[in-house]
Image (tube, rainbow, N blue to C red):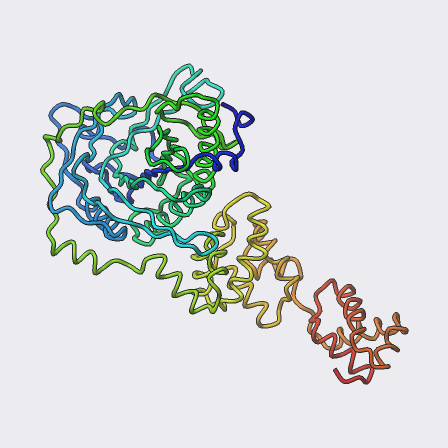
Amino acid sequence: MTVTDLVSYEDALAAYDPVMGLEVHVELGTKTKMFCGCSTTLGADANSQTCPTCLGLPGSLPVVNATGVESAIKIGLALNCSIAEWCRFARKNYFYPDMPKNFQTSQYDEPIAFDGYLDVQLEDGEVFRVEIERAHMEEDTGKSTHVGGATGRIHGARHSLLDYNRAGIPLIEIVTKPIEGAGERAPEVAKAYVAELRELIKALDVSEARMEQGQMRCDVNLSLRPNGTEKFGTRSETKNVNSLRSVERAVRFEVQRHAAVLSSGGTIVQETRHFHEEDGSTTSGRIKEEAEDYRYFPEPDLVPVAPSREWVEELRAALPELPRVRRNRLREEWGISEHDMQSILNAGAVDLIVATVEAGADAAAARKWWMGELARRANEDGVELAALPITPAQVARVTALVADGSLNDKLARQTIEGVLAGEGDPDTVVDKRGLKVVSDEGALGTAVDEAIAANAAIADKIRGGKVAAAGALVGAVMKATRGQADAARVRELILEKLGVEG
């Protein structure tokens, strides 16, 4: 089904109620893999970070990564989950071309964390609670590169290359309970949940959670049921969605696709689907297995995990300030409204503003530049704010140059432009481009005299009491100085020379 075959989103919601389930995989930032001592460093030569254990060779035995367990407990606690007193690993059997053991070591019916929730704030300030079914430990698969096809997928490829460096990297899979009641806001709820979860993971310092690098990815399960009914419909699962915007788009597309199929008398097939970034559509992958098809059984080579209650409480006491609490504190410190803070959050600017303040900027000035000029540039370039080639320290330096009068706002924008263009730090750009405010009284006085002489009629109006007309002379001086004069001082000089009190 293509985008043009869909029913409108409004028509879909008029007839059906969406139910979601979100499964988020998070790669942990451990130094070694989940069950062996191989490095997890990115960028190494293909298949150079492997050993008999993660390759599943006969006679090798796995050992659980203690830091991975600790990270899982921290995530569970931050998600308000109960932490199991005893749990164990299982083998999930499936044909994994990129998992040399041909099974995944995971957790099945005994996860380390269960029955939690995460409150997420929507753009209008409404708080929506997403209930968590479980958070369990497992290992990542390797990476397949399909060569020769037009799409980069296996269909049409001449051959595939397998890199097992990623196989065995620790993963935490966080699974929600069915998300009901979101209605037309289902796409927004999904995006807000994944965004809040990403901020939480980063705050815990257990992963960088960079979605564009696959360190965090979301499987979107969605079904529709006729309005007013309780029974869930057949679900689809859109796999490995790797950006917040794509999560939102995947939910919206699947709502429209399901509605189109059901409205035409068709049947939804339980399957996995691929998301296509270029148009926001999904296409069929494979028929989805049920749990029993994976033939789970307890992993015989690993002992159960039984975290002591004392250790769990020590980890709970050491949890950092969590994102929502931190945002509320910052909102009060910055003296801004909930709406303003939500806008900052939506723009991905919270940490950037905090870092800019820590580098010496005033909070209001930091917000002004990140949410103004820099947000505009990020939008034009189609990138996240954090991806712009400018650091919080550099933004703080620009604000300092404005504060001490070396730059006005126009010159500051030109300075930022130079930094983004790779011309150096702010001071270097200012020197190279000659951007400092003209503060020499003699030079300013001359420019003012010339403006008055060239605009005698306006000068007479000012002398006659129409002080507002001074703006035209200020503009003439600013033009003559290429915007590098201090506009406030120019106005003062104009009024002084014309014998008028400001």
